[in-house]
Amino acid sequence: MGPLVPDLVSNNMNFIVAFIIGIFFGAILEQAGFSTSKKLVGLFYGYDFTVLRVFFTAGLVAMIGVMALDHLGLIDVNLIYINPTFLTSAIVGGVIMGLGFVVGGFCPGTSICAASIGKIDAMIFVGGAILGVIIFGEGYPMFEGLYMANNMGSPQMFQTLGISEGLFAFLFVVLGLASFWFTSIIENKVNGIKKPAIRFTPYYLSMALIGVLLALSAFVFTDRKSELNAKIQDMNYVNSFPLDTMNVDEFALCITKILECDKYQGVDFRSEKEQAKFPLPKTVSMTENSLFEKNTFKTLNIRNKINIFIADDELTERKMAIIATELGYQNIRILRGGLNNFVSTILNFKPIENPTTKEEEYTNRFRLYASQKIPQILKDYKPLPKSNDNKPKRIVGGC
Image (tube, rainbow, N blue to C red; front, side, top):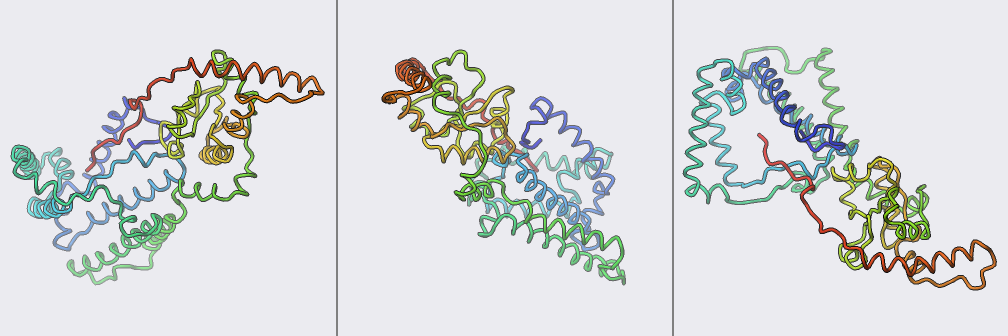
């Protein structure tokens, strides 16, 4: 399954769900006629473009679907594996794949589908594919130079073209719709059909409407991260956004009673260098990018925990808290004035001169106690070494 947020399918259930999806996928392929080589090679001879329409439609819907899930914060796109591009081997492999497709009448996926229902030609095709894998594996030292040639990393087309993700998705959907129309013309001509490729019937009009809506949705499902980053650049918006706060005395009290203070969880947005210099007990380290990651859902949604966002200054805290709130996280507070205010007010304690009220006397007394107690707590505190064992990783694979 994809890296969904929250994690609706556990790692243990992934294989079971994938198995069930695989059964339905194979059944749909077979019902669509993809177990028949004549239908598949129709793409190359021009009499049947069902393969192009099905896979192009699947790609378009998947593309818009991923954009929608990302926009709604329901998927961690950083964990989606993108196959690296080795240009030379991709071209050579594409030629071999195309020749194998047109000669054998199957691609790897459809050959398995056809072989499973007893098609002998598909079984031979699968056997040839296995033989090819064995030959490549055994002869890899000889093929390695070609296989690794022109490594381009994992580029994304919209970045390569220098356009926005939404614009590329829109143009790609338009290209898909145009290809459906163009291949219908070819199909009709090859099959001797005199009717126009596109007719103004309820079926064609509804399909066209769905296509237009799919294309326009590319502009609706904007990149969530870019959208929120743009919002927090507006200082009026940042300063007027309603957020709960914690004052420095509450924070100091929590640190002095660190063994009893289970209600709060600190979320530290300072740099690693600053955290190493001045470590805070019972805090988790995060960055702005972390807020969009899958594991953050578990960290910020611990039951009965209030998350205190901590940074050197209150402005940074506010920005991070706004992003988290917009992403749907709750129980968030910021440290009023930031950690710099805490250091100057508590650790570098300067008493209120000539206190006139009981409250000022109590404040002086507590801050004096905290200024002596907290440095000792911080001195004795040894943060645990960071581990990446629980950090989610990209799963390599795909067709």
